[in-house]
Each structure stands twice: as structure tokens, then as C-alpha cells.
Image (cartoon, rainbow, N blue to C red; front, side, top):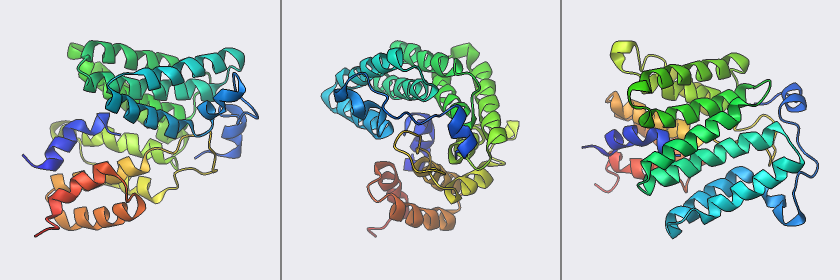
Length: 266
């Protein structure tokens, strides 16, 4: 079976703002810390969560992820802010991936639902919140059994809401494309995937550079776009965007895996 075919099944476990938006849902904290040692929990939190995930995979223990969870809880108890709730949800997403990869599917399902429930509680959710909800709901579908169709519908609703609120949000475009790509053709899937992914990779990772705010999605959008073209037997475009993507993300493990599709060694 081709590499990209396997990647399709794993997409959901891989791994933008206006001033008005930032002034409401995502107010950048001056000092949002529980103690001086936990400044890093909020600053560059996205990178911190991913690094903790990798550390947990290597060490085969969730200690690194649990440590961030504890610190975020402490920070939130003293400085309740939507952005902290967002990162708590994002942390649960990666923690769920960790437990799934560790063979504990039941607990992985519980963890992702915990993350979804947390982000749902954010008042006045914006495009970023809905994009994360769509990402998490997409991942949760594999745990839903007979309720999978309901979860898929919810994922679509979140993705549509994310785009409606901000069509120039890279992550909104990516999650909608992911939904469309994973929808069977008999249900009109794969009709809008290319359009939304091309839009996604054309957008900046952030409208305003900030160490506090989300920047995920562009690498994932490139990966899915390449997979989409391979799925369509369009190797010309697949190669074109692979070359473009690897220049932007030269250290990407996912992209390097896809390089096997292009027979560079022949």
C-alpha cells in the first residue's frame, strides 16, 4: 500500500486575528503566570506542548504533558482567560494522541472529550476556537462508534463556523479542507479540498506575530494538499507543492515521509 494511502488514515492524529478579536477573546496577558518558573507555560506554549508530546512518546510516560496540564490549571485558577482555556484544549488533543499511540484507546477518547468540553465553555468563541474544536472533533470520531456520523456533522459545523467568522484564518481553511477530504465522494466529499488548502497555504500563520497565539496548520495544510494530489493521481502538482513545502518546513518529518512517493533516489 502506498505511503500516502497510510497517511490519509493518520491525518487526524498528525500533527488571523484582527485587533478587535485580540481585544476580546484573546487578550494577550502582560504576565499570566502562577509563579516565575512557569512563564514558559504561556510563552511559546504551542511549541512547548508539542515538545512535551514528543518527550512523552520517547520516554513512554505522560509526565511532560501532565506537567504542563498542572501548570496551566494553576495559571487558570489565578488568571482566568480564554486563551489559557484554548491551550488547555490543545494540550488535551496531544495528550489524547499520546494515549492512542500508547495503546490506551479508551482513555484517549476520554481525554479528547475533556479538551472539547473545555473549549466549548469559552464565551463568544471566535474563528480560532471553532477551528480547534473542529480539529479535536475530527480526531474524536474514531472513538465514537455508532455516534461517528453525529460527530462528523459536528466537526463540519465547527469548520464552517470558523470560516464564516474569519475566512482569512489559515486554521479555519485547513480544518474545513480536512473535513471535505475525509468525506466520501458519494457524499460530495473531496469537491472543495483543493480550493481550501490552496487558500490555507497562501495565508500567514498569524496575522499578528505573538508567542501567545496559535500558529499551527500551515505544515499540515501542505501535507494534506500533497496527499490530495497523490490521491487524485496528479503527481505533477504533488511534486510541485512538496518542493515548495520542504523549503518552508525543511525539518518536517511528515513531509520527509511523503518524499518516498517521488522516487528521488532513482
